Image (tube, rainbow, N blue to C red; front, side, top):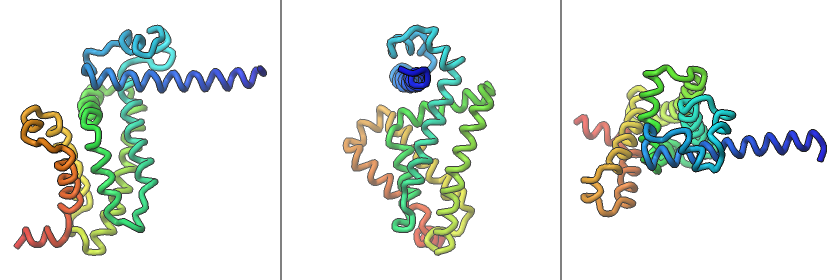
Length: 213
């Protein structure tokens, strides 16, 4: 094997191991809570030594942020795949679906962001996270503006519609983890469909005007 081939293989193995570390860390954070998970536990889950973790990541905060960046990048990829020319409501519907399809992950990242912002941890990665999120927000804003101009959505600032969808998704994720509501809502799939439908319709111009009368 040539030196170039060896270097390429080594780089590939490094990336694969890094992804395995992130995947195992995410699983442990969700199962046990991020504060209880140690670097040693992540290393054991992956099947590598603790020192190998530090070849990839300096701190747990870096792992947190890279997981959050990956999450926002997945949403960006989803936005790029949605054909809004055929279905004008598709982007908001898929945004809502993405946020609530895995409430454990959503709520984990919501908790982590508050901690990371308070600690001002790994500022360059925080900046990257917020840049990706701002780009996603801009994409949503452009669609909402177009729907307002078509008089399909209530004529309010576009961020009202987006933040209303975020608030509903946030509440839905918290609700999914409530022991009380798990007993009340016996058909969670049906309830999720109802929430999704409500989230897509709630900013419609006709509904808004009717409520205002």
